Each structure stands twice: as C-alpha cells, then as structure tokens.
Amino acid sequence: MKTETESSRFATQLHLIDPTAARHYIDSCPYERQRMISDAHVSFLASEMKRGSFTEATAIHFVECAGRLHLVNGRHRLYAVIEAGIAVLFTFMVTKVATDAAMHEIYADHDVHRPRDWSAALRAYGIYDAYKTIADKGAVNAFGAATLMIMTGLDQVAGALRQDASIAKSRNLRKKAIEECQPYAERVFHVIGTSEGRARRQLKRSPVFAVALETFRYQPAVAGQFWARLAADDGLHRGEPQKTLLDWLVEHPGGSVSLQHQVNAVAAGWNAAMAHRMVEFLRPDAMKHFILAGTPYEKERRPLPLACMVALVARARRAPAGKRRILTGQRVTPAGDVVPVTVMED
Image (cartoon, rainbow, N blue to C red; front, top):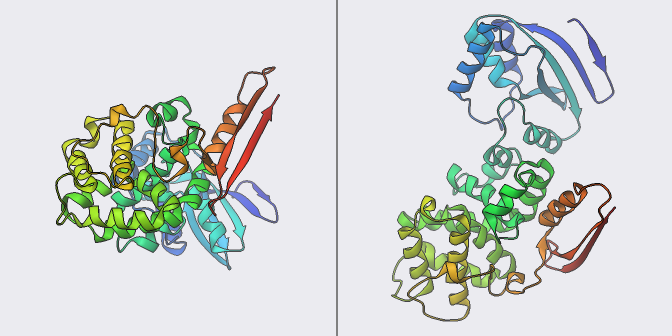
C-alpha cells in the first residue's frame, strides 16, 4: 500500500497485485450477477501488461454489503494479471452500501475498459435472471435496443440516435427506460417463450419488441390476443394481419431494411388488426409519421415517455449560450396518465 484516502462511504488504496493475489480476490470476492469472461479481452489486456503499455493504478472496484466484499469491476484485469504472470499496480476502491439493490446499480453503471452492454445492465437489475427460463440473451438484448427506440418516440429512429448519441450512452436514461418498460417487457418475454420457429426469431427483433412493448403499455388486452396469435403461427389465414406481418418480417431480414421501415411495418400490421381489416400487403414507406392505433402515437401531438423527455431536456441544456430554447410537450406516466411538460432554458 502506498497511499490511502477514506470517507464514511468509500476508501481507496494502491496495491501491487501479483497473480496469486489476483486469484485470491477473484475467488473470495465474487459478484453473482457478473457477465461472462471474454477470453479475447483478457488476452488483450495481458499483452498490454507484458508490453508495458497498460495504464497502471486503474481502479478495481469492490462493493461492501452486509460485511462482505463483492468485485463489481476489474475482473478482466485481474484475470489478465494471472495470464501475464507479472505484478501490476492497481487502485483498490471499496464502496459501502446498505442494500443489494444499491450494489447492482453500481455494477450496471460501470463503463471502464469494456463497456457494459444492455444485456449486462439488465442482468444487474435482475431482469435477465427473472426471465432467463423464457428469455435468452437475444431476447434480452432486443429489449435493450427496443427501449432505445422508444426513447426516440419511435419516429425517425436511426436518425435520432445518430443525432444525439448521448441517448444511447446515458446511464441515467438507460435506467429510467428499463424501469419504465419492465412491466410490459415481462408480457413480451412470455409471448416469446410460447413461440417457436420463424415466429420466435422475428419476435426477438428489436423493432418488433419496441412496438410490442407500446401495445402492451396502452392496449394490454388486445395486445395479448394479437401477439399470442402471431407467436402461435398456426392456422393463420391469408390476409390476416398477423400472417401478413410475419411474412413481411421473414421476407425482409433486419439488415435489408432500415429500423424505421421495420418499426412502421409492425405498426401497420397492428393498425390493420385494430381496425378489424384484412391486409395482404404492408406498405411501411407510406407511413409519413409513426402511427400506432389505440395509443397516443396515433395523435399528431403525441405524449412522450419520461425517458424521452429527459433526453430532450438534456439536449436543450446543450444549446449554444445566449440562445433560449423552450420545449413543451406531454409525457405518459407509468400509470398511463398524460401530463404536460414545459422546459425553459436560458
């Protein structure tokens, strides 16, 4: 130990860690919701250490909860020390928390060396474990990508994400989106769990998942019937919206059309079903603005989910100095109530 700082909540120390010590901390301080180890990433870090190009004194983060230490960040680097066979200097940081939930949130927020993807964040929040019997990693990742799409308002999806990359990277927005969509994701996961073959593959596409989430949010009873029939993929008649939508998805793989086209196509199938209308062809390019029947998305001035409004506020705060920007709109609360939102920035 060379230096030390302490507070009532956290403490930091510098430690020179050799392979034996690295193995000790890995084995004695497990965190149960860790992602899988990437052998390729461990080898990359080990090669950096052996070349002398690895940045020393990076933080290895432990969380102390109920008197036990849990390694929440730095496991790849400790494995790399073992593979490299040399001692490396690290900063050990210990954060004290009172609950498991606080520990999981700290884990989900880490973006050091190898960023957490949506799957890792969902695992930390307990969602992956809660639904792992019916939702594989593909479905969980689709949920993560779907929440990003919903945060854009499901209109001009790809363009909005390119224009404001902070929407995809923000930890706070990610957490809000997960919390807001989780009750409806459970319904979608159950639908996927009952599906097979081509229906299962298509339901795990993020644009399909995004529209399914919003239909379960605003039309839970109708959505249950619509998606269950599509998932079954049995006895569907020509012209039935679920069959037409499923055929369109199979004929248009994810990489062959834009995200917006996929979102619009799914909405077109839903809209036909809501209108009790038979349809043999879907025209996603004919939808100038995203419309989803039976939801606020069928109105020109539509309510926005909370996470989307937060993103707009953040964008307003980055406006050039001296320019006043006023954002007005609506959002939908988790209870389904529409409330006005006005944001003024100087």
